[in-house]
Length: 322
Image (cartoon, rainbow, N blue to C red; front, side):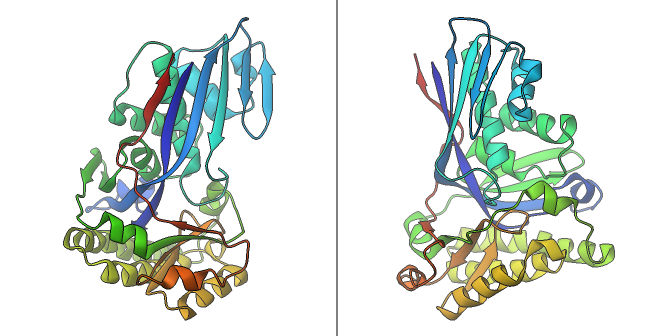
């Protein structure tokens, strides 16, 4: 049996600029500053007695031929790694894996690839896992997503990730304030979920406005990197609020009355900034405030569960082989 553990991610600034249509056409490319969080998706791969394929996730599939799997990510990861029969695959998520804004689909893909490569007797580097996950999700399955999630999940830690026509570069950010990040940043669940692909396929209100806003978001990623390097978390908190303003102006599907109302309530409790993670439409708000804000956030509705922003420093890893 092989078990991989792969982190979800939270992005501070730059989301949307990692999509090829922007990053490969802009002279400055795209850039995202994000961190891998200490919440995970585990993938278990075990040898079967027979040659069938059994996949257990929110549904259960048992097929004679892997080509008949409905779970596209599993099917294509099996094809790429050459592990195509005689296995049971199970995915287990710390947080529900659809529509949370935490990059869960890419985390699943990276974790699958890591576990299947190890099952086949191979080790895969973080760069290989991220590149292959992008190949599956973007090039093969045609999903309208960017490339930040795959790299965040594979590498772990806090990173400035740059995207352009030459490829992807991951630059680790070393901070001296990890405990302060955990104390001051909180994930707040909206109680809503929506597929990132659905939001990203929506036509923007104004294409020219979208491009202008994405350029601002790209520049905000430079500022976020600077604030993290300097330990200026209060400035970073204000910046993520500014990033949310730009993001919600791109498309009507990014926000909505319920989300806007929750944002206003969070800010009224003393947050310095808050932004919805991922493509929008639901999932988690990333919220910053001085120590003590989290206690006030508990006044929110019961469905708005709170999670401290803990950091994973390892990335996708094999935690069991036997």
